[in-house]
Length: 454
Ligand code: ASP
Image (cartoon, rainbow, N blue to C red; front, top):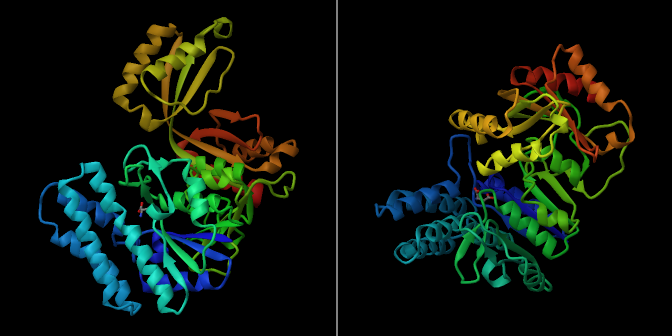
């Protein structure tokens, strides 16, 4: 059995929705279909979820909601009309949104916001199920409430109550036809609607894939496969092949380093249950896409992708005989912890320590304070903050078995005249990182791409 999730761009209008139905019907194993709310139809368009947020905010302010309500209903009415689904489904959706809006007086703001946001996926699942039936196929909408998708934590940032796996698994143990399931939300133990963070339909798909022990979790989006490097920096990568398979570890490293196709948080349930994840394109369903799984056949000396992340900064601390001081590193990190600043990496020299952070955690106005605290706490010979750092990341399980991979990267960068300010390799050897100046990023990525894939 396959669980397939379709994102908003795959469900933005009737043409896209018909593609979704064709894809599902082309493989009888595709039994559970998780849907997002309708996304953008064109670049200037607004996603239904964003329309709903506007609607909820307007209602909370006590202002007239006719325009926002009309804009939401119009999106569903347009699709229902193009698909000739009849008036009833549109009435049902109108009533549903009205009912939700009426609860503005009884719910607190965060609860009300989630109730309205969830309308996007919930009504879309009903409409998609209707569209399957209009094509003569047996399909039904399944509700997160009836199937036991219990969430906990903050409204708008909820997580799954782990006991839900057993309930969900039972709910899906015996069903016929195709089930269309709304992504993005579930219910608290008290019966209130709660949503995952934005983009959360991926989480729903991943949870269901784990709960039913699916053979594969197919995540349909609008790219053919994952490219080994950002095509905006190296356009010619599109002439070659995408990545056919990668491991969960490789996916995690690339996602960390800015490969936006994955949402590494969202796929945790599927990864833990060892369900293979297939990223595919709704617009080119014959393309096999990228398969992400526990292990793969690795050719020694190969890498799977090259990523770059901008916006880092580096706190450099130097002190003569630093290596003999017990507790120096701990005290440095304690200052950051007290200031609630997370750090990413911590490479060190004999008499120096660097702490690499995401720049947004150390805005200019906090920098002065942190530097003062470090001076007070550590009495260093030198402390400074470097900004505008880009981290390059070369990723591949194949690096574990081969000497000279790092040398190859250094040579490529040296030939391009690019200097490295920091290097870091974890003991897993599945990736290494190189920090450079942001201004050198594009040239550096191209040089590495040529060296490893050219
Ligand atoms: N519709 C929600 C959002 O736009 C969830 C999703 O599409 O995954 O964030």
